[in-house]
Length: 245
Image 1 (cartoon, rainbow, N blue to C red):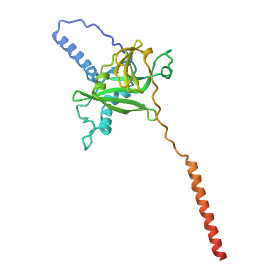
Image 2: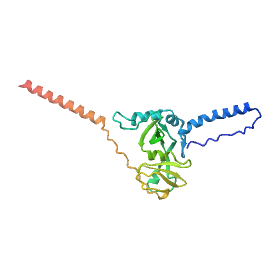
Image 3: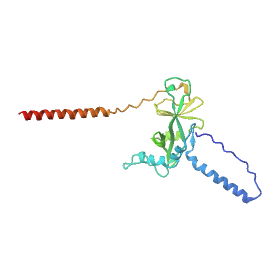
Image 4: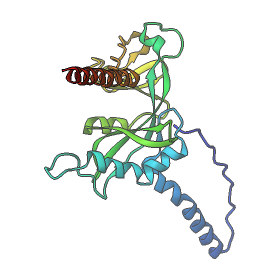
């Protein structure tokens, strides 16, 4: 959830003039309009939402990218993202700390990640969850992934304001963590079906992705040079032999 900005309220004393009262009512309605418009992608849960992430989600960038990558293709596969596509509340994503995954229950169980989860609906029907991150090279928000599923989208649209949204990467589960209790929003393969003290969770570290071996360009160049030299030597020997004959 974004920092709690406290709006200072000033008491307005009613005046006898009906015109003045109507003017004040109209001004209040106009002031509230931007808040009502932004509520469809308001912050959810604990954690900050940078302005650029909010702009990406609410300004159409996320929806356009979703349609480009996960949209319906010529074969009818994918999600039909249309003009009714709507982002839900933006939640900062937390991950279990390395210490907690190693079995150390001391300290904070979760840490903030460079990720924000956004439930997505089409025609007011939940269709999946998009994860946005900030590209560290461009410093711009981008779509990281999209997982289709109405259950997860519905669950992540209702994250409590006072909870951290924790993603269990090893099991695909999502938890609402508040007051040292983890409540499963999406169970995944965790086997957790009810609110559980976080110290009692049997956490498993996610399997690291295999590293892609990149051949050393210097080694390849050395082989190429050796092959050329070998061919030159063989050619020279053949020429000398022909001349001697």
